[in-house]
Length: 126
Image 1 (spheres, rainbow, N blue to C red):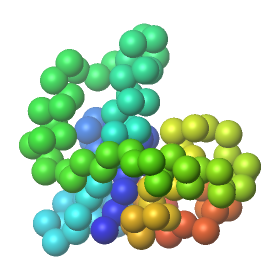
Image 2: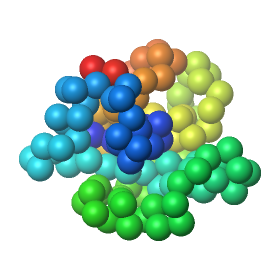
Image 3: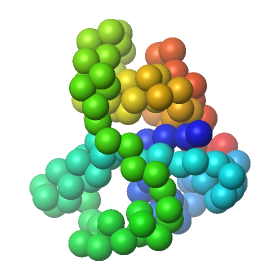
């Protein structure tokens, strides 16, 4: 079971050339459960609202078409952030790390700072 970092989700949507072949294989494999956190949708919405990111208004349709599994933020996820070391200041990434740890998911990311945490990670460039 995997959790997509926000940039990986956007790269998948845009079919970005930096997304590695192994990562593409993992996401395409129907036997893999691929989670998308509500924190990623929140981050995308904030960046879109500020004009820093262009995604279509029907981005939710893309998510539904891909059959990703929605992962909502729980009180436990939010509370667990206090137990994380301060290696990373980005609150969205810290929530993704918390969710991956508590839900025993492999986080697919290209962010080197995330590897400083005790979380299973797959390098999205692979």
